[in-house]
Image 1: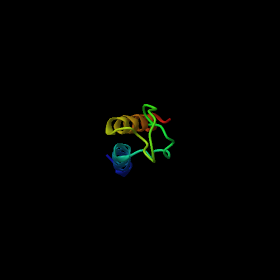
Image 2 (image 1 turned 120 degrees about the vertical axis):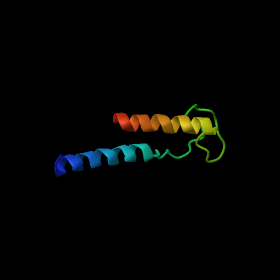
Image 3 (image 1 turned 180 degrees about the horizontal axis):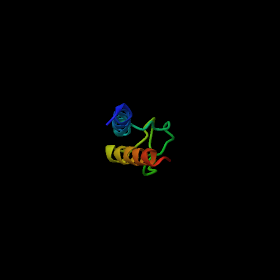
Image 4 (image 1 turned 60 degrees about the vertical axis):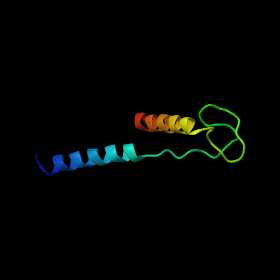
Length: 67
């Protein structure tokens, strides 16, 4: 194993950490839950923690697949 192989392994490990640590940035509140579409008051983006978690999971999956 030479220095190029070691660098490749390190880059792959860093990429895996970045993907795992990535927390999606949600768009601004628009009056409805970003996951289920339920009407919301104020500046809420999700109706509950489950919807928020599902939205974040879907966004991470979308980012991992490249769009």
